[in-house]
Image (cartoon, rainbow, N blue to C red):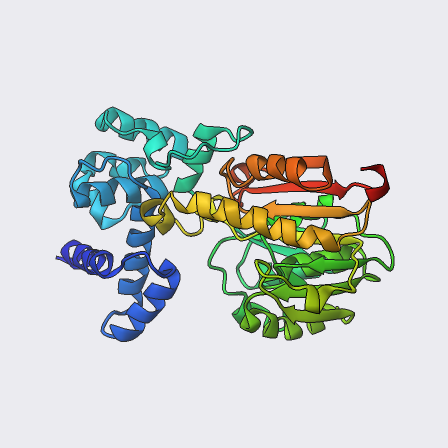
Length: 392
């Protein structure tokens, strides 16, 4: 039977995957190795494994097939064969809103607890609505584009002509269905940046001024640097990262965006970088800190299953050490923008409290950017100002 074939493919993938590498990378290698799987097989295997992980650790006492059927029912608007054969009484209800489907599962499985989807002892940041956040895991986040205001109309038209309905979220933001193959529709991607909605909103805290010198100290793919440049094209910029390959990938992206005034340095911010930075003084520092990434697990739901909660303490210590090492290069009266894509208080509010107690900083603004109501990531951002040394 076809359903048995689908279930067997899911079970083989689940058994082979250990959570060490991102699921999408594992699946790419797995499908490449198992070329006998056709496009339909890959599509259903992908749907089932991602849906399964979105259930987190809820209903762990149920058998794996039942949990898969429950997850597939909750996550998808159309029924899969695993729902039709395992939960036939629910197959006609798959088109209901997620909230109503959760209620149906609670009626059929009284042991189902929504809080066990996100089953970690670390407390969430207080500003987060827990139930809404937990429910969001059953909906795949959107793909967001940051577009120049003058280009958004034409880009929307081009996407529509290719069968993609883009939702205008703001004057410079479009939301597309996740999985949209933009490279096939718009090979030249010079007129937009792929950037999550919440990540775009962190720019509200930047406020760069003409001719400022800013440091994006954990630049990674350079998204925050490009956001800075769009806000103020006349800034100078230093980008650094501990990974040289990440910095090497920035050049083409920056060139396409017209960002020319920048330097690159490979720096380990846990070390003493005085030799490289002794003469630098910055008008602003963006610290998009290494973190648990828990605010992005809607895109990587395998982390709900495999994440080791002890890592939260590790990241918290890392964030404090990096901040302490970079703030010395910030001019008095200038901002440190502290950002994480975490929902854990220990990486967010508690780190900011530590910074205020141990470094010459004062808090100007702090925000939990709640993406879970917008099919986006959830992030944390704080704008801290370095105190004038003469007033200390």
